[in-house]
Image (cartoon, rainbow, N blue to C red; front, side, top):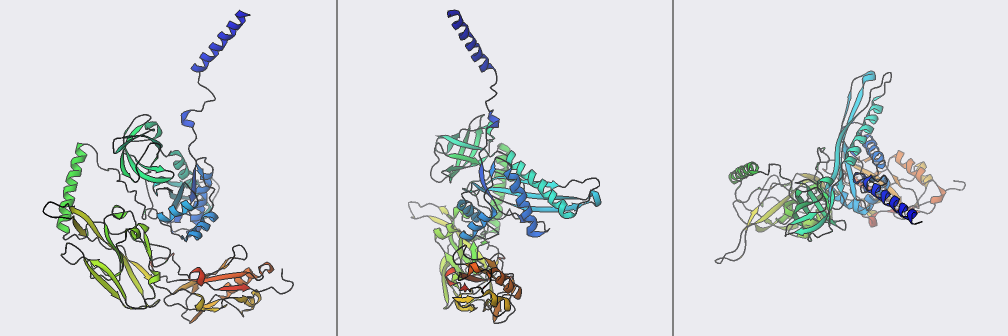
Length: 595
């Protein structure tokens, strides 16, 4: 009995020893650990190719979403309908800025948003040898920071088949599917390096718990997150196999152990549409010149050359910095700028919007709006549509830099009364920048500042359009009954008074209570110059068919007319009344026997 027990013990020890020497078949290797799954909202791609318009862009978007859904890396359950509903709720319209993407991603609780474009479409050959190639560019934007965390630029090509001649549309569709597959595969293959801050090393360095094995490289920039909010930026300096040290480039609320760091992705190629104003990180870009002694000497000579050149070109603080990055918002008179420009606005003394200014650099340019409010700068946009109509002379107090002056002086601009649609104006953004030039001494008190005025932003053409409010509606008057039968026979229609400088309209009809009635929209309605405008006969019949259902009896509907001047710069903006100013009508009962 004792011998049997000893023998069993020996067998157990031998098995235990062999187990330690043999690879465990049920242990998942480190390289096969599951990557984190990102919830991603995919915005409809832009089509820069000039082929097939929005249809091709949608096809490319859907192809990329399908490929992403096949990967366990991405959750693309956020549908196009869900995104459109949130866009309507937030008042966001295409084309979207990076700020719009972040707002939309936050509303959808997405980890990231993805946008892209169909860069090129090319056809070559003939007959069975005819081929199509399509280049797609995609970039994934981190919802918390606005930084690009992944992306790809890939070209897909259709395959020639013996004895088979496809039409061009089929070849392009095949090439899009191939490009979508390559794009998503490239993004899946790139594992976004993520790490956790282990400890602070001095005042401006930290140690993170990932290194070369996790894809961390010297020079890599990383954002630091705490509870999904960005709190700082790092740049990796030295790496080991399983940890690394990084310098703190920017800290908003102090970087601490357990904060998460995520790498910032460097896009290899970006299309023109995607290269539009990005959200600056607030952190310096990686040095493009070598970091050795030779590189430092090159930097020194380049810096000296730049300073000498600037000294000869600019005097009295003129035009040293880049011009403001102006953009357009949801309305044709909403202007946007990048709030992170000029050191997050810390260098901005005054922001101005000038009207019909020409190229005057000094205070002679008529300033239509001005502010020194840091809060407004951080807001990143201002809508001037509420200023119109100008009933009394408009006096705008602002600063000016007279020719040869070193400091700004107070002045004002005056604008005559102006109604809606009298003329189209040119608007530009301009800033007066202020930087510290010297500290106070024992002989003098206070701080010495240097002022400069960069060039104007790009010009934006805009018209103050009068919205079609309730008092400008001809029929149906607010609260009237509208019968589908009268729309069918032409005795009733939607009619309103013309707005000056408007080239086209569109009409939206929807129930006051969501879901209670149909949602309908008209086609484009050209402004003929008549005093009254109405929907076309085709639209009138279409609206009648939409309302012609007994379940809609007595449903209260609202309708709004949206107006546009096609000569304005903002092609996506439509002027519409506030919701409380939109007219209503009640769907009249159907005749007996109507289904």
